[in-house]
Image (cartoon, rainbow, N blue to C red; front, side, top):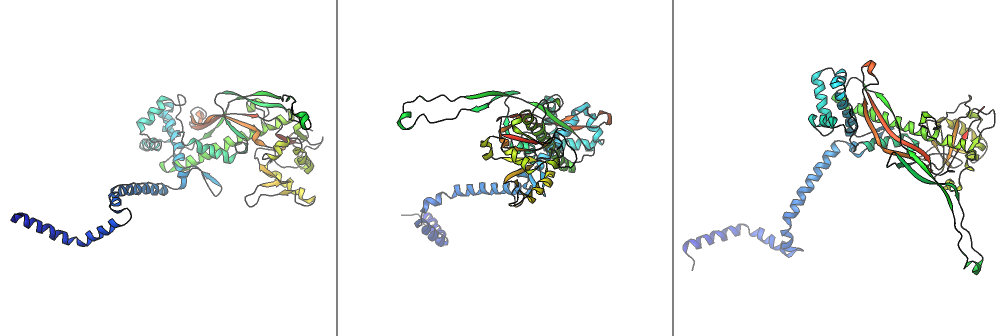
Length: 441
């Protein structure tokens, strides 16, 4: 028997359940569906994952709001742009290095106003993900040498990507990382013996297999330092950080690419190129890979289509099917189009529809450092190269360094940013490239 109080409490419970009669019926229906009550028990975990999804979407929206530059180097109207963060980092490295030089006097000469100078210093440290005290500590620790702050390694690949876009050497040669200042790699010196049959039918069944030999030699890669200086504008504000960084990134990449191309194609073995021998000098020293115009033909206009075709017979047949191409100055197109008057089909085809220009069906790749087209005399100038450039190695030691020079513009009380890298160029196949050269006289 229930007491009077228990009866009253039980009645209140029943009244409350009647108010949720529709919900209880719906819950019973859910229990009869696939998963039943077990699926309902998983709702807390599902709601938790839903919250995590909302947070991920929020982060994605933030990244999209910051712009597509987060994805790396992008090209707009034919002009490359590194990410905004990379541009800020390059400028920040310059600012923090300048604050270290001459006990801060160097930066004071660039930004005379003290308040603005402090503001830009703090902004530079923030761009590198540090507070000013931490940033100055990095400078004191001398990550590169006693006067420099390193560009964060996360941004170095963007500068390298720009070099890749600007230079033919880095695009088409084989970039090989040098694990030390001097590295030795083997290459074939004089080819190898061919395989052959041991006899006819059963006569060859029990014959000894003759030894096939290769003549190899060791090629020494020596990392040689190269680089240059960039004069920095004297007016720097927070809102100029990104434009200045973009300018510096493009300038550094363009100049490094230009020097790499000159070294690979035109290195003459002198001190100008740190004794590095490029393709031109290599071919002229090995006449089997050189097509030279007849005596008196010292102008680029003297070259004929027969000269260009002769180059193809001077390389190993294997290179003819391994991405072979012509390499020459863009202005040489004025000469190539004249070959189309000889007959059909067209010998020279200009670039169109995303496809490169071709000569006799072989791609033509333009190299800005080579001999331009002219009717004037250009004795012993290299007009074109042909072959599979991948068999030439661009050895690279580490990554480019971006530092600040405190002495070069001392007379004008200015600073300069210095970009350095260490490379070497070597032929890893003796017969993969040929050259076309004007007569010496």
